[in-house]
Image 1: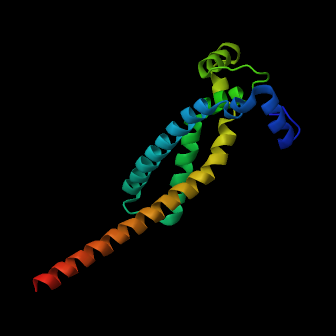
Image 2: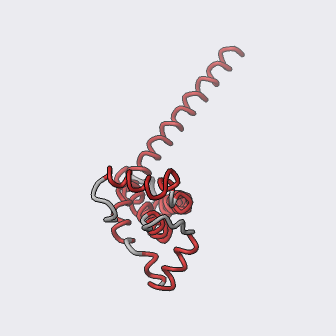
Length: 166
C-alpha cells in the first residue's frame, strides 16, 4: 500500500503506531470476506459441475474439473470483492484510527460510489481462478480416494460376514 519501504519498517511502524492490536486490524473484515468466499465457491463449483455434466451427459474429465474450478473460484472472488476492498482500506488506514467496517463501507459509498467496492475485481478474479482450479481438482481427487476407501472397507466387511456365516 506504499505505507512503508520494507517489511521491517512495517513491523516496527505498526507496533509503534498501534501496538499489538495493529497487527489484527481488519480481522473481522477478513472473516466477512473469507467465510462467504468459501461458501460461495463451493456452491458455485457444485452447481456448475452438475450443470456441465448434464450439458455434456457424462462425468467431467480432470481438465474440465480444473476449468470449472477456476471459473467457480474466480466468480466467488468477485462476489466477495467488496469485503476485500473494505478489509484493505481498514488495514491501510494511516494513524491510530480504529475504523469499523460499516464506517469504511459508507465512506466508500458516499465518496466513490458503489462500483468502488469492486475495485480490483478483475485482477482478483485472475489471481484466485488458478487457486480455485487447484483447490477443486484436489478436492475431487481426495473425494474419489475417500470414496474408494469406503468401497474397500465395505467389501472387507462383506467378506468377513460371508466367511463367518459360512
